[in-house]
Length: 163
Ligand SMILES: [Cu+2]
Image (cartoon, rainbow, N blue to C red; front, side, top):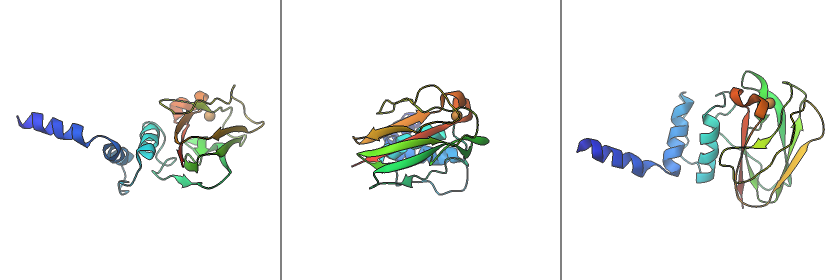
């Protein structure tokens, strides 16, 4: 009987607050658990915490709301070498263009939407240098993406699009 009640209580705790708590726990450090995540931010944190190195995603979102264009470096330091996106998690306003720019470090990379991303986008074949990949995010939602060659190393990123 006690078991059953405990389980029911756990189910009730899931949702945005539950996800944020889980994301904080899996960080494993002494950092305070972020309790102020929105539901969208919790989705990004859950996606990143599953595999991205702790020194790459520290639970915070770069705030780029109100900007026309945001640059994300492809091949930034993280996940053991130049296997990260920077900023790895960013909050933008609807209508913002994200420009992924290749640093030339860490071999070849690409940008491909992944998981339960609300947006579909794909930069094409992995490359080491070349033109930026630009994508406009005109609706609110969550963008989750991965570098396919470095998926196993945790080269992933997330975007929260707010009004
Ligand atoms: Cu990569």
